[in-house]
Structures are given as structure tokens and as C-alpha cells.
Length: 92
Picture 1: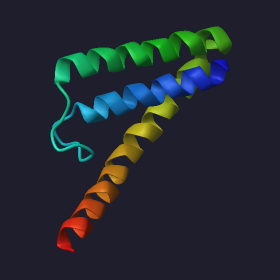
Picture 2 (picture 1 turned 180 degrees about the vertical axis):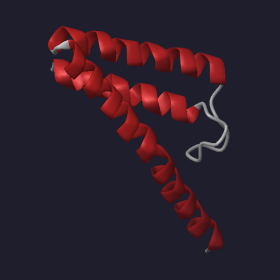
Picture 3 (picture 1 turned 30 degrees about the vertical axis):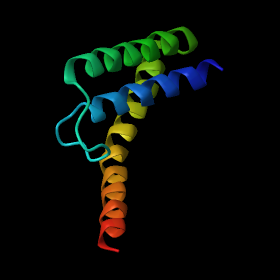
Picture 4 (picture 1 turned 180 degrees about the horizontal axis):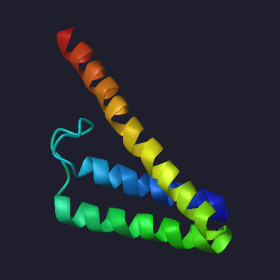
């Protein structure tokens, strides 16, 4: 259960960072920057704290940073797929 919390909170933090950025493609307008980024930082901090309790320091940092990198890399591609689906629906 602890490992799931580590990954879920890191993914949630990355998603909140993405959704609050001006270039995001998931929503019609980005979420308000300041509140979303504060909650995103809290999610990442929670992930780091939980990982530090579960693993060695280097391992915990590696798990959280790798999860953040994978998530932040995937969100724009998923956004492009969402935008492509919207364009197909409006073209019909």
C-alpha cells in the first residue's frame, strides 16, 4: 500500500503541474497556477516523505524522480491524443 501511495502522489503532483501550465492540452483553459502548483508540490513532498520511510535515501529519490519524469513526459502526448479526438469529433 505504501508503494502505491508513493507513485500515486507523484503522478498526481505531476498531473497538477501539467494542468496548471499554460501549454497544457487536456482542458480548454489551464487551472489557476498558484493553488494548483501548491497542491502539486505538496503531493510531490508527500511522495518523497513516504518513499524516504519505505526505501533507502538514494532509492527513494530515484523512485520519485523517475515517476515524475515519466509522468511529465507522458502528459503532453496524452494531451495531443485528446486534442486529436476533439478535432475528429468537430470535423464530423
